[in-house]
Structure formats: structure tokens, C-alpha cells
Amino acid sequence: MPRPLVLVVYAAGALAWIYGGLKVDATDHPFVFFVAVVVFHALMGFALGRVWSLLLPILLIPIALPAGHAGHETGDLSQVWEFVLIATPFNVAGTALGYLARRASDARRRR
Image (cartoon, rainbow, N blue to C red; front, side):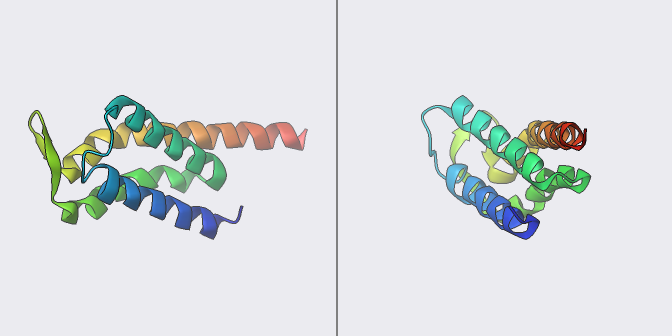
């Protein structure tokens, strides 16, 4: 898949997560939803196959700032960007796993 298309898919998925899934209580199973977001980042890291893809989850923090309140209270968290900030290390780790899997796949293919 061409990288520009992967970036469009990433942007659409990230915006759906921030302004859809986090804005309203979209799931009764938040852990499953969280794991799905991390797996999404791993797939994007694999599809992009570039080290700069590790920066993409960090860029979601300023994108989430205008989202406002999450629409549900979870302890002390009420702003969407707070949820994104807490998820960022996990999303970077998922992206890194995808990137490393791509590197290993490409190395095996070259042999």
C-alpha cells in the first residue's frame, strides 16, 4: 500500500478514535477498545515501515486538544487530550513493534 494512502488511513482512524471513540462512551469494554487502538498503531507502523512513524502517536496530542470534554468521567480524567496523553506511550510501543516487524520481514525477504 502506498505511504500517502497509509497516512490517510492513519489520520482517519486517529480522528475517529479521538473525536468518536473517546468523545462519547463508545464502548462497554474499554480495555478491548484500548488494545484495538494499540494494534491499529502496530499495523500502521508495519505498513509505513519508517522510523519517523514513531512520531505519529505523539502528534495526536495537539490534535486532541480542541476535542474538549470526553463526555464521561473516569476518575480525575475528563479531557480527551488526557486520555490520548496516557495512551501515547502504548501507541508508540505498538508502532515500534509494527516497525520492527516490518524491518525483520524486509531482512528475511532480502536473504
